[in-house]
Length: 453
Image 1 (cartoon, rainbow, N blue to C red):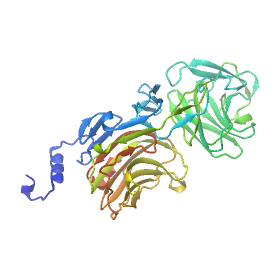
Image 2 (tube, one colour; image 1 turned 90 degrees about the horizontal axis):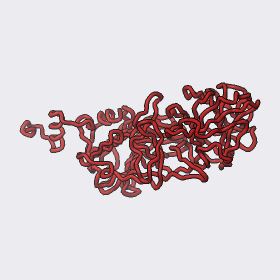
Image 3 (cartoon, rainbow, N blue to C red; image 1 turned 90 degrees about the vertical axis):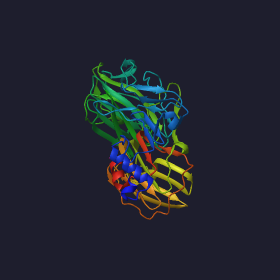
Image 4 (cartoon, one colour; image 1 turned 60 degrees about the vertical axis):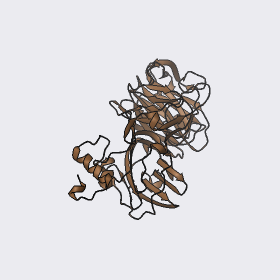
């Protein structure tokens, strides 16, 4: 019909026009362009070659250990080896929101022993009493620890001695009110004169004070988890990791940055799930008892047979939430599609000084790299939302972030031959993936803007 009108359309463009005119596009389409591959981890719907399929048929997931995630009820649950953490929820301050699949490409080890038993001798006390199974914890059972300052005048805290190397580590712990409205979390060295302590308001998670003595390179993150807040101190390693209650949000700090006062012997805080791990950001909770425990790295691989491919036109979109720090270099490859060192495509996050937060789309063909980048848009933190898209071809390359397109490269070397190559999704990602889509055609600059919105 359309050729008879003299439009001179190719078969692909003719089919596209039919789709647009008949209004038969799906919710996955962008400007009438239907993606051949859809991995929607939020809705648990998947397509390969445009046809509905299942998670296990579309993508391969591996993790050689159990791991924790948060379900729709806001409960921290454990899943077994190689079980994907789809349906992972994050608390937005008022409700639990499905963020898709929790994916952690780095193996992490919780170096804290008895991570949820503060009554064990592994946790010495100073003017504190600790009671186990004293409140409902993030895992939905009554196994939170109640930490109560004694009536003695002085500082009140519970700690663990780890003596970590002076490399990046993260110490995290869940805290909630149990009479007192503030919690102090500290990383300190041998002796009480050098420390880095943060005070958190347990009614809203705000940081009311930061007390530091000595030279430190650290950051603090706070994540709401129902009635708890997960507080993490991230940076150079320390000897002691310390937690305790406070009756006020600001004070004149004493040992390890804690307040000296007399408790009432009843009021305190709830403490759950202490974790210390090598890394500049916290990862999902890893329970321990007598020894440290490692959660294995995860992989998500889309087999070449399930990937759309065209040697002249390709488009891609991915969204989710990422957790990262300014650690220097290119440390966040969200997508890696590689044939060999000279022929590959990837999307990466730069975390190097002034460039931190920039997203780069790169295609390398016949040993020559072409790339487009966004202005820095993302700040290091936990659960940072992102939505990225790109268009690739033998004569163009461009990317968009959050509804803003970059400046297109119209003279790339060529498009790499990836027709027989698997794709690594979340190749270097600590966070969640909501959706991933691919087209074997150019959805245009207007399309990548809409796709990334």
